[in-house]
Length: 267
Image (cartoon, rainbow, N blue to C red; front, side):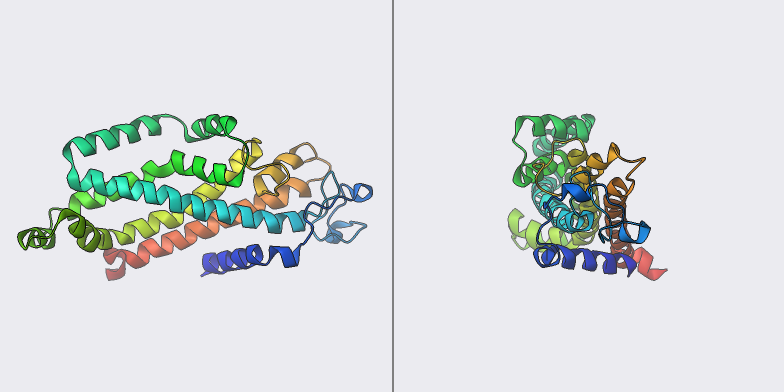
């Protein structure tokens, strides 16, 4: 419940970001490095300002929009690729399985962050490119989970019965195997949202994520590193937002795993 409430608040803030904070990039150089209002700040900013006099709270609200967009669309694209390949590898097996899983093994051997930085260095900074990069570097997680589920399901009696009555492979996969693997897919999808949000923050921190004019939590942490000893609020609050968001998605993912696992329900 705590994780769900946190995510609902985050989603609502992202949806109405333009109304809550219409000017996240407005600069007031005379008010730069102003502390939060409750910590002695002189200009009334609740979470203070950064080195250019921009409102930290306003930028965090707009950063939530970017993080959620990247997390949800990245998981949708990554899941679409990974689930499709996992179904093919698990059900058809043989040559398809060997080729797909060897590609997954090769990509998994390369550190995801290194691969993402390399691809991002070639492409121009943009939210769409960042989503594509995250999908390219994480699809194999879905593939392995779905393949394992399909390998177990394709030998069950109801799948044999579908073959006996003449059902085609596509119908068996879509009507019998995929619905029975949905529980595992839902859980891994929820957990991957948090992972991609953290991944996006890492790339933005390294300066290869979205354009510098787009507020993101990772970029805000990077901007605050230089002032961490004198203006601690610049890096602390965006980093705290990343931590809470990832924690919330993991809490929801764990709850879904327990709710959808029959063994957990029997307990």
